[in-house]
Amino acid sequence: MKKIYLNELSRRLSINESALRYYDSKNLFPKMKRDENNYRFVYEEDILYINTIICLKKTGMSLENISHYLELIEKGLESVEERQDIIINQEKIVLEKIKDLENQLEFIQQKKIYYKEMLMKK
Image 1 (cartoon, rainbow, N blue to C red):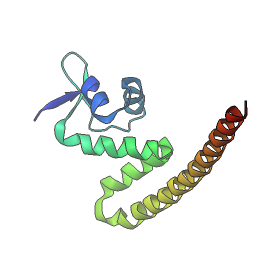
Image 2: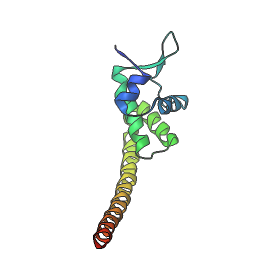
Image 3: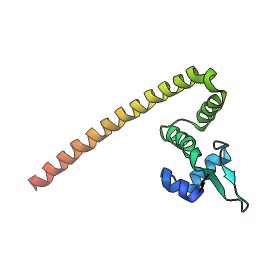
Image 4: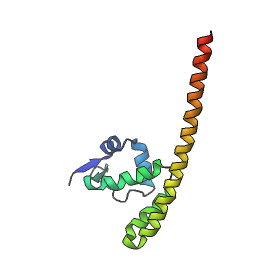
């Protein structure tokens, strides 16, 4: 099994090492281990698990809710319905964020046109 140290994990997941250390300190990475020099690492096959955590955080899910979600994963099939509910709810949150960003983008694009027209009148 190949060990993936924090710096490489950070590069692969496009997240800074300090964030990974913080999440680890909050016990979100139960698969994170330490070597004989106390350096953090995970095994290659655990990256998908960690990527799930990072993805949920990027969607705006709280660390508390992520922790709960991870506990449900450990319960196995008995928690599938609740996990599905969590994901459906998070999807709604993300779709609302996308809608907000689209509105903001439209505003910026209108301002770009406005300023371009203003400059052409100069």
